[in-house]
Image 1 (tube, rainbow, N blue to C red):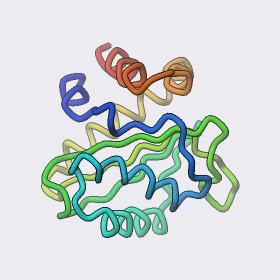
Image 2 (image 1 turned 30 degrees about the vertical axis):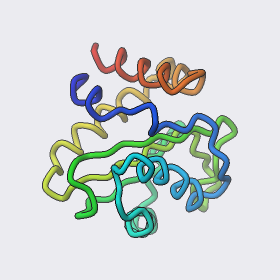
Image 3 (image 1 turned 90 degrees about the vertical axis):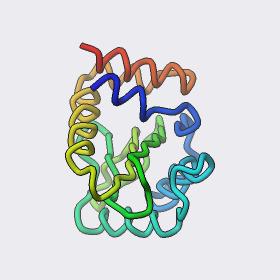
Length: 153
């Protein structure tokens, strides 16, 4: 899976200091990273799909990590962007905070690849030391290297 992560991760898709403080605005900010590189061509439509998915089921798992996503015809390949908020963003009605927000755009035909990707990221972020390293990363390159090195085990 490390090779797959290497092909998906892009420094331009990582925001280490999110400006937004609300889930919808946070997702818009992160999706904007995908838009800037042409990974998502219709960001407003993709955002609507991601928000619809959030309304059905919150994507906040635990330990302050959220995996927002949509299976969509708006992308040709899997695209991944990440936002980080050290203080955390209130993510649900329970007041739980998301500190690491992964946004995944998935072509409808690549469901299995998506499941492998999210499973790998979930496993990596469950580890307290890995999560702490991601929260402490000083640059997007360091953030990516933390994920890559952890995925290679």
